[in-house]
Length: 265
Image (tube, rainbow, N blue to C red):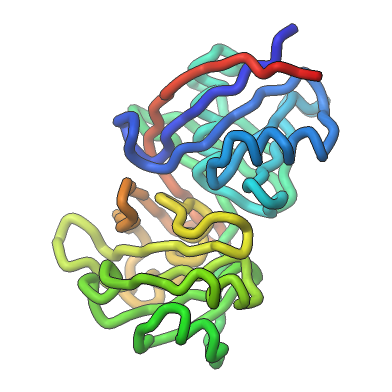
């Protein structure tokens, strides 16, 4: 059987927007070096590999062009989209993913895919000098969770003006850096950007896993449990968030761009 790979734009309903991910539904587990080579070849921020598990769910792994990561929201959303669109699962059924961040679940409602992801709250920290120098901004707040630094700035205008020094940012010991502020328009509650040169992604277009930190952070700041957020990258993307205990429900849309067949050695 040929191995099909699908390109999906996540957190958008239009192709060429949102965050592109490659999704490869395998017949069984694959060799890790092969998956890393495929991810490097695709050169998206993440390529997802999944296969059906004995439990009825799917084992799911995510690779950047440089390494495997522990959590990725947009490639999980893209994976669920492919499983429903290509008939692996019925749209009225929940999809269960076995991952390095535990069990993740996806459901389909209307035109939106909802992901049940872990809350990844940050704690306040003293920022390393290299982080502030790399961003070239004066932060209002800096925190950190097990993955990333979170930096709040004073306005959306400041956020949009950030031009990181990626060479310096690559020296900061974290997966990435989330920069956020309250939104200037009533359409959105907050905005963000995400930089992760250390794992091969200078700026990620729309980052689901970053919203696992942004959700609980803005819940405390704004005293509310539901949000509509915008990631202000060049491509841009809209993320809906609902807090539920120690979980973050993240919803978005997805659009298929292309399907191709991988040539295997």
